[in-house]
Image (cartoon, rainbow, N blue to C red):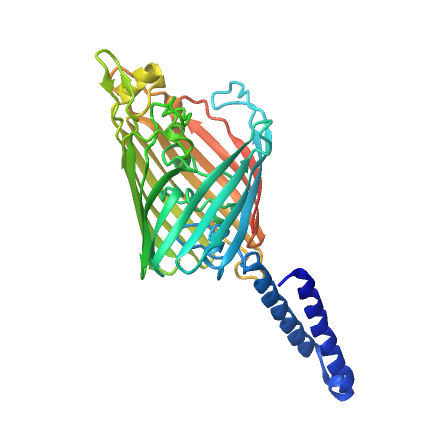
Length: 441
């Protein structure tokens, strides 16, 4: 069915209702506002059904339900009957930095206004067993400036039951809160917590295969994926681990060096409505068969990452907490390979955690608006332990206090404002004010 057929059918229905009213004047006189509303709802329902026939229920599915750990817009493909699914999200961010550091020295920071990211989800549901889902992201607006275009995920699901299946392709690693569910309407704050950027290096995706499922209040995801490149300099052009964290080790499925693989698994449990507990772990080599020294030594760089998380979302409250730690082996060899000295050392142990709480102060009012003041406290140290002969940089022992407010006039749009107090053991922290706009569809 095409658009040329839809419009005549809608007009035909409208004319039919008018004709019935003219044919029965008495009934037309008795028709009140409730009857008009009923007819309008019928018209809307028919229009929607026609759209579904024409479009395969893609754009008519709303971005309001999360599935399998994904955000509402990324989950739309799971709710179409068959065919194409289209969704997306975007964020614009303004950052205003203080002119001085903690110690009173000039910060040297320049304020920024950034079209942070624009994302399109494209999926296709072949039948009740097979579907494809993908995310294509444009960051920082223009590749001719500071921007980039990337494939964030692209995978195929095979569900052998309604509650379990196999997933393969470029997948998001199921760790923490925001690596899988990072749409701006799903988390408080203008930016993702530093613990979930430096220790859990969100957004983190690798090529892999694994299983997912749920049973009653329990859900799980487990994959075998290409490992991190802690040394850097390989075909994926990953920069490798650094003193500030593991973020540079992501290979993103881009000609990823595949000498080392890793296992990652996650379990979540819904205790009661609104309250969930979960944990995840990652283990694999990150040396990617690089060698260093004389005689040559192979860098194993086995990397273990663990996190535990809890969240409560009910009765107007939005509360979550997360703790993460990582251990990296062969750091002295990695430092030697990357020519890192003294405080430049990669951390043998990295630790971070945060707690945050928000409350919708408009909950008791009859409105679709949400106004959520919130606060977050975060502490991370990406050099909690370093090898003998190296030293930790006190600037990497950081604390961040965030005070802000989030306003949602509708569920698919959010405006956020916050002030962040940044401090570290080197007294070089720079406070900042952030303002963000976000949307999903």
